[in-house]
Length: 369
Image (cartoon, rainbow, N blue to C red; front, side, top):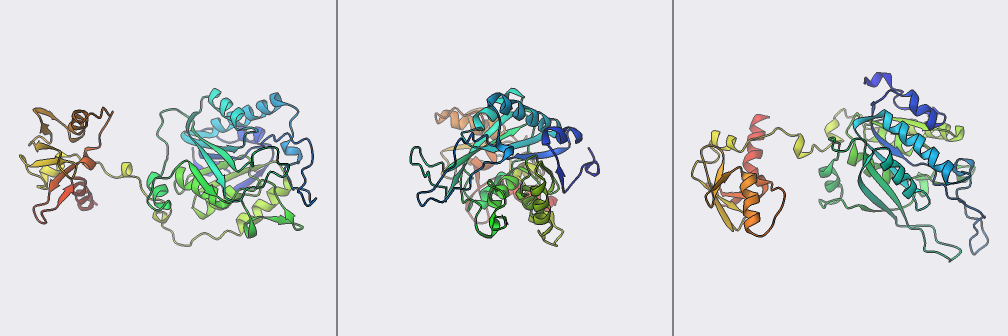
């Protein structure tokens, strides 16, 4: 679907259960949804100092019963499924009030859950009545439209963001406060405005520059503001007119970098770089037939390089991956796969250092580029 046929970088005023069906099918890369939580508040909430808590009590969060909420949820999730590309993914955030019902409906509609994540709030609102645990987290579900389809996950970028440690599924982030919190007449403009740090992590993880991000519950435009900063395209749908105006004003004030270089906003994944067959190392003289490879830096097992680009271990011949798996099996580890590029080492004739063969692959890629 041509991007020009989409209302890109616009806030659409209306009900998402209707407007979603006006968008072209299979035109969106990522959906981030922050739907009404159906909090079912019965009474006002007061602090011990007798000040009233500014909780969610607006019309958009009121449903007569679970059946009405479920029908609403099914309608917007179905609409999102229509506009998502087959390779697309959907994020939805909620609390114990709604997330389990949303998750069940999401699965019923054919989405495939990739992860559930927990946003742990570093500064949660206290439980003023003292009758339950303090609600200090919200849950995000990350799901793909089509099970088994190739989707975007920027693993290396997330790892880099996390000081070169694998990004975990528990995200410790603060609430939206201070200058980031939008105000109207001195009061919170929106009761559930999400912090930009949360959306930054979501969009960095699951999209690329130029991808189309759809938020069917746009609110004050956090998704659009972060998408603009990261050079993603966005579409927002918002039912409340006052939020539409706020979101447009907020996003218009965002000034992205003037440097036209998408490499600033994307760290390529290893799987996106050119494939290098192991045999190419022999063709280019980086390894020699008959040379010894070592499984692991300490060389617990050794294998011989064959002229065919295979290796031999204990009389078994195969690829660096298959023989690597065989070594692990001998070592009592029955694993489904083994990345031979990371497990096999060679002795560098120039330095005498034992190095992973992956450095030779990297050298070939550099020559090819």
